[in-house]
Image (cartoon, rainbow, N blue to C red):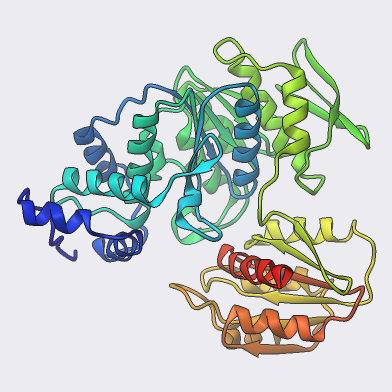
Length: 443
């Protein structure tokens, strides 16, 4: 562990902490723990207890899952804010700025508030080593304690059972789609991964799963914990009516609902889980059907099948899909769009991901590849992506680039009016391309 230079209570130590910028804090946190990921609740819970953050005073909704977490959080946030409640959200990772992770009433926490929370965590942690994610989670909880929201929607970083967010007792646990990812930490089967996700459930409290094919291990864990698990297709249902959809659970039926503003037919599954969570909390936090409908119609989320029209008739589609299931869903949704002459794929991935599965699916739509080195911790190089490309049965032309920006600019140069650029593979890739796309539009 890198020792903290500011652990004393001296005036000089406190002044040094107070002078740190957001960038200083984030860089220092990355060096605080010898591992960037170390699952376990003991360290985080101990510091939270010293800070007086537990138990929380607000209604807590925890959201886990392999895919669909961000969309689920966004819809819950949109529904409850439109209903007049004060809502806080904690999500990760971010696209453009760290501040996106911590929001109150839809507004990102500013640098001053986050740095003050970091100072409070540092003063409380003593010699307890914290990972980057644990430090950020505690800071978010400190901010939420100060602003006193009615509801906080907290996205699990990875897994569930041993994730730092799980120090909070969920009033409702929501588990979105389950699939294979982070195998080195969570296991290599859906059954094993479901057991880890199930850890956010609590005995005597409700839980929701919006995966229509939930592994049996999820139900087994719920029974062991004594949680009241509601499964899509059993406790609640939906029917796609084309321009609208219907949701029902027991005697409650909501008809003529607008399709979510978030693109993709799979968003109906996410929305169904969201509506069940809202249904379970109706006695505590009532929400009208009109509010639900308007929130579904207006809730958006950057980087999830986000379409941007550029000058010259070129469209850019951005999606943070970074595992096999997410990429398959992305390609299926892409196929619902009008056909274009050529699709240029800008791909940047982390080295820990299943590149072959993702690229095999993307190859179905790729007319050329712009392969980017992700210049970040655990980022895959363009040469590594090219080596995977060599294994594809369908190999459209591929070019390697030293950065995401270079890959995107090459795609822009190659694209002709009426063609499409796809940027996919990681939050880092989409975040950088989103910045460049915004700059392109402004210029």
